[in-house]
Each structure stands twice: as C-alpha cells, then as structure tokens.
Length: 250
Image (cartoon, rainbow, N blue to C red):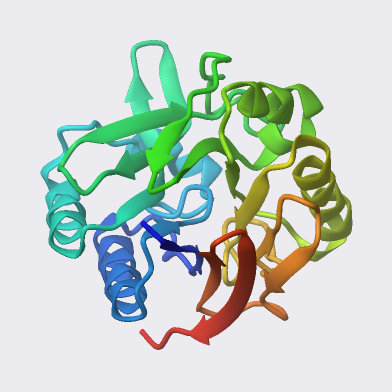
C-alpha cells in the first residue's frame, strides 16, 4: 500500500438505539470508502452511545447478527473498521472495540483502565496490547481513559505499532489535557496518533469534537475545528503525512 489513508469517524450516537447507530456507521463507512479511506475508527461506545446506566441492557455478543451489515460492508469496501461497543463478558460488561478486517475476521480490544465513574457498570479488560497490520503500518488500540495512563502508550509502542489509535469521549474541559498527552505520545514513541471523538453530546457529556491526528514527530497534521459529523483524514505518502476534514451528511 504505497499511499495510506486513515480516518477518525467523528460521529454522533443515538442514545441506546443500536439499530439507528448501525445505520450511522454504515453511512460513515460508505462516505469514507468514497474518498479512498483504508482505515476508519469510531468513538468510544459508538454503537450504543455513552449511556452507562444502559450498558447492561445494550451489551452485545460477537455473534450478534446485527453486526453482519458492518462485516459485509467492510468486506465489500476492503477497509479496516473499528467500532465502539459494550460487550457481554463472563465477569461483566466491557467497554470494547471491535475491529473488522477486510478478510471477514474480527478482533476485540477491551478498555483496560475503566474510569471510576464507569466502574459500577463495566469491568477492566486484560492489560495486554497487541498490534495489527495495516498496509505498511501497524496499529494498537486504546479507549479513552486508557490514554491517560502513560504505561498504556508505552506498551503499545513496545509492540512495534507505528500507529496509536484512540476511541474517546472527551469534553471541552478535558480536551486540552488529553490532546497534549496524545501529542506527547506521538513525539516520545514516534508513533502516529489518531483520535476519534464524538460529534456531539452522549450520555451526560458534551463532547468537544476536535478529532485529530498527530504525526510521529508530534506535529498536529489535522483536526476538526469542533463538533459535527465529519471524517478527519490523514494521508501518508512515502514518509509525509497530510490531512483534511470532510463533513458527512447523514
């Protein structure tokens, strides 16, 4: 893959409505495919919304047939797509990411550092970081509060991943601090860092939007100016990154 186009889907989720959110995901995947995106990541809990009291009733299993629409479109478009879901586990509910690969396979990642406000509703995932291939690059995942723990980024870098991909829900009040951490990880570990934030309110939080990508030297390549449905795209040609923001109409 001589040119790689990765993108954050800055999307808004309908509270507790998985069917409606699957439709939103399909529209974003289609829009990303139209502009040649190879890899697309959605925000934290994008499939359910950040609705903590509802997580138990909304939790899905990996064999949920509602996911088939996403799996099929991923295979058709030959993209790699990461979505945010509550997953039913043996010991509770995990705040998770499902990665759909072009060959029809999937992989799961579970939030390792559940925030104290989430602890009544979700359990920590195993503290292990894995990397996955993406063209000539590779990526490791993190979910929101994971990225506030420097050891998490260190473990991601130790896998050899060249991209650190974060699905988040970050408010305006927390954005500057969290963005500075992500920028610091890019520079310190020489990883590109892609962050996908919600496009609007979810649960009790008002998202800041401003999804972004930082190059491995820490330079900010592209960011959304605020909220709203958009694709935040970073393109690598050779060793050079460039960026663009494309509004998405649902």
